[in-house]
Length: 420
Ligand code: LLP
Image 1 (cartoon, helix red, strand yellow):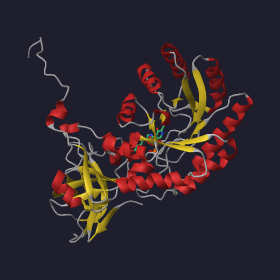
Image 2 (cartoon, rainbow, N blue to C red):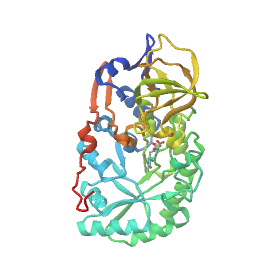
Image 3 (spheres, rainbow, N blue to C red):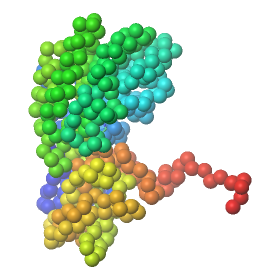
Image 4 (tube, protein in one colour):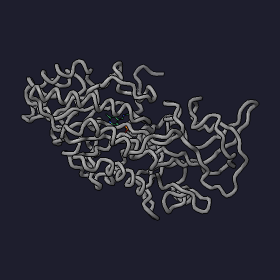
């Protein structure tokens, strides 16, 4: 459910016509709907009512400061994966006691920054990481709250690039070694063993893998109790899919699957949803530059490109593409929708049936709120596009378009001693 809807055949973000935004800010741009973001958070939160829980929004999905502030104001915590993300949290005044830190490659500096900030827990993914955390905490004369991230060895049935819960992935501690890890961690100085965590992948559209992961980690928690290790938090990660083309289960069904094996454990449940919060709350608005026909294909060349949204080429992802103005629709054609970047991988859709747009017309690439802007780059020296947040009839510019100076910031022209 989202608030990008046609009113009088003109696509709106809430009460604001996208065409007005294009006129005001130029194209391409990302626009997010605050009402949709709030709704997604509320629905997810409601699904977990009756269980002691904390939603740590996986900010890697969409990390603009204004978006983080919106979620924090609703009571969300954050799942972070770098010191940069930690600093974003601190910048918006987020409560550090609601931050969990995931990732396979945390540096000592990042560990120190997290301990200094006083976050809720660090999700540990390897034996050497445990030792590093213990050492860093000792140096800082602090105790480090840690949780082990377990790899439950299952197939979440999603694209291989975003699947993390099978045994040959780099993520988490193998199931077979979990007990040894906890025993070892117990013997290390300065560590508080507070939790257990897992995250099996992203854009998962079936509840069965979540239920399976839940059962596997619940069994571990019980076993650890008999070894006198009493945990406080169970972090079941994120991963719930959204309807790009597929039909994922509603949050209530997902929550029921998570909660079933955890009922009798009386731990605080932590979840790390990213995509389900932000995905359908954002669209990328672009303008048609050229229509081009070859002997075998029809191309719609738009001003957005793979540097703005890399998901189609990276994950073969489907994003619906809608005309912003559907008052005068062209005939239905089959075309590739492509950007100006010099790569064949620069496409938004291939062999897609859509209404033939006119040159200069606006197109909206839907469901682009998650893993869109955050994965944008300056490839081809293209400026990263602005981000706009709509709330009712108000539109706020929450990130400016890069200038040329932004693109070359930090570069130096050096005089080479070797000459030319
Ligand atoms: N927690 C951890 C430890 C994660 O690694 C992730 C995502 C999440 C939570 C949030 O998962 P979500 O609820 O958003 O599925 N760039 C890819 C997605 C990468 C996901 C990485 N990890 C894409 O565009 O599909």
